Length: 258
Ligand SMILES: C[S@@+](CC[C@H](N)C(=O)[O-])C[C@H]1O[C@@H](n2cnc3c(N)ncnc32)[C@H](O)[C@@H]1O
Image (tube, rainbow, N blue to C red):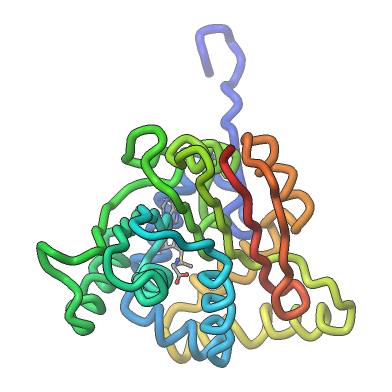
């Protein structure tokens, strides 16, 4: 009970289908990704039968490249998007991977070592940080990417405002995220897959059913294509465009910071 005699109202948000105090969500998300980090890349291939690779290729292809650009990949995890940007931009690209989870970054750095691209002269920097408070000054980057990350962020409008803040005028914003299936036939199949098969894959392959149940639930809680587009505009991003992938299972949202 507070001094006023009223019980303080605790603000809540969703963690999958569960309501949790706002202050708890980011720790819960961190725990999920700490527990899946080791198996994360293998599980992505298994769960999507490799389709996530095509989505990520389409995503990175949407970047309009110029020489000497500075890239920020937020919620960059184990580096999939950064590695693709590096390949596409060739040498000279300065890429920062920012993720809230040190375990995911550790796996990413190990993958960079295996590719021979870690060291003082590497184009990829790995930084632990929150999408809601990006550790970078105003107008630092030419390109801001976030792939399968925004869904996990507690304050999505806050993260979008941060994206705009760290982008230079003319800078590009690109988000790849699960979205709302637009084909009714596919929607039923997808629901069955998400709530029956996915948690079982999590249980038997990654030994972590809860994390993959969270994945299915968090996708259903994420704003649909039009709602996210509006949220981007509300955050001051302009020229917002949406591209559905695989019937809306995923979508790419792009915008400019003018
Ligand atoms: C599904 S993974 C995506 C990783 C990578 N972008 C990819 O496409 O493979 C989601 C990532 O978001 C990170 N994440 C979750 N909340 C975050 C936040 N508030 N700020 C930064 N990263 C966050 C997690 O740690 C995790 O690495």
